[in-house]
Image: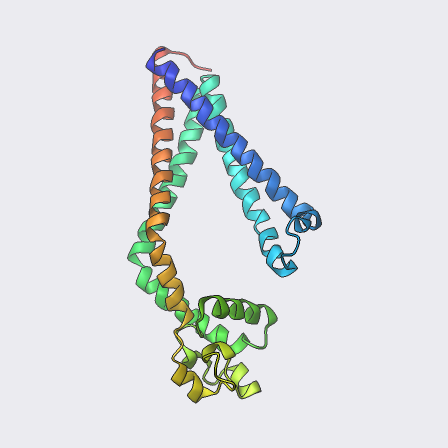
Length: 243
């Protein structure tokens, strides 16, 4: 078996796996989005509010699945039929995705501190204005503060002059130790509960190695796919096999 034939077979098998995986994600995403009632029954005792968060992921699965199906089809058919047109389209799509990923990584590294300041400046006014007033905002913040054992964006100070404090004359219970019966400003200050933004950043940093490894693996696969598709394209060009 020559190099061209080997790479052609590997290209077909690799993209066939991508096509089948994308089709699976697409099917699950459509099922979750269209027939959510049947999907929720699988979770049994899990609360409806928790399960609905998975239902909302359906649209994301549809998008990712559709992209994978398209890539798998182009790569598989391009290699099988030795079609230069399909191979170059496959190469271009992978290249665009790769460039977007690299650009996103560069922007994230260069502007990480700016992004942190921007997020804090955006989240704090929302917390002060809508917490205790907007049900969805309150629910998200309560879940975050409960799970991470934190208070506000950067601390209890974020609730100064907030709608919640003005209406209830009390700070959220998450801002005080569990032994504190009444969470006022003094108790919140004494409890010294950390802000949620710092906690989230710490979680991201702890998992940065895993995320970086997965991202590097994906980039390596994309580079390999581009190299193989371009090799097949150039080989067809030299051999004169044009379909």
